[in-house]
View 1 (spheres, helix red, strand yellow):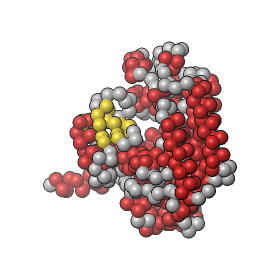
View 2 (tube, rainbow, N blue to C red; view 1 turned 90 degrees about the vertical axis):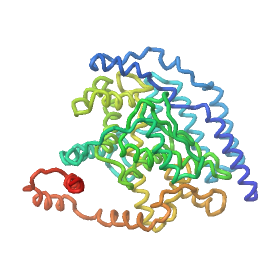
View 3 (cartoon, helix red, strand yellow; view 1 turned 45 degrees about the horizontal axis):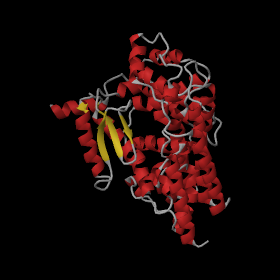
View 4 (tube, one colour; view 1 turned 90 degrees about the horizontal axis):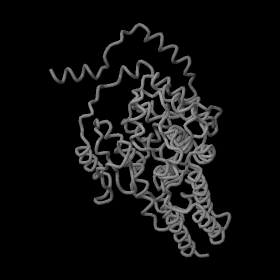
Length: 445
């Protein structure tokens, strides 16, 4: 097969995959109505959410599971016939097909004990070990919960007012993202059909018309939803042959969400309370996996100091699709912490191994970290196009190299001894307002 013939086959098979996955909408298939939250909170969290036994069965999947499964199986056979069992891009395509086969089973078993089993196959478990390490996600989540719950975190928190209404937020985000994307490539729109404050689609960001925002909220949305989620979709759509890179199965969720959280961190857009949400979600998943029911998880976060509405939201995210009694739950929320750690380790390892030039490929489309060496090889051969939209620190890698190079180098230091030294140094300090309050006061004077 010539290169042009190979590329044509990749394009044809990719387009088939995109067409087959179109009707699959995982979150829509397991969504809860806002009335459930109102009823639950009105009862002060003393009664289970009033989810009808046939709640999920009333939500139309929009496809026949049996028919779609057969079509995916036929596509997998076609990929192997046309590209061969050892072809790198063919292997990625087959792995993606296998993920969608699991998704079909996940959605077929909504509200049952088997839902959790398929969720763990797709997104993992809180008891899984981090790649190359002995610690579990739950252990890391607890450690981060401690760090982001320290008095110092609260001490630094500034009283940001949510004084930006949704219409104004739409205008601000459209203006900011208009300087990152080409004209017409992204839209920011008002929506009354989403539960969260905002959500990204293929080439748009929906903003909840009933939500209000702080300026730092908009910074987060700009880099998280815009630069990462929409950016990688648009980069995938610009692929001449590998068009499947524009859509994401659960296999890419950890890389996507972890990269989005990492970008919040690298641009200094995040803050302790937001970072705490990432670790809280791991704890919530683990509690539910181990058998805690909806009310027990909800009360745990209320006792941790979260507002009832926030406690409900973090709990609802875990129990949607599964069983309210625990054990069978939706484990997708592990992806944020798992993906963050794996992305950081990937970047540090690429620098240590002398191949930092592959790092922009994180933005080439919807990928997993294991895909990137294969995609980079095909980029050099001309089948994969490089990413069009790349954050500046990944376009010019000098600063990123230095930052993560130092991070890798100082990892050999015994931090326990260092912390002991500085703890003694800081022990006599009075607890005063953060320095920036003084700066602001001086500027006002």
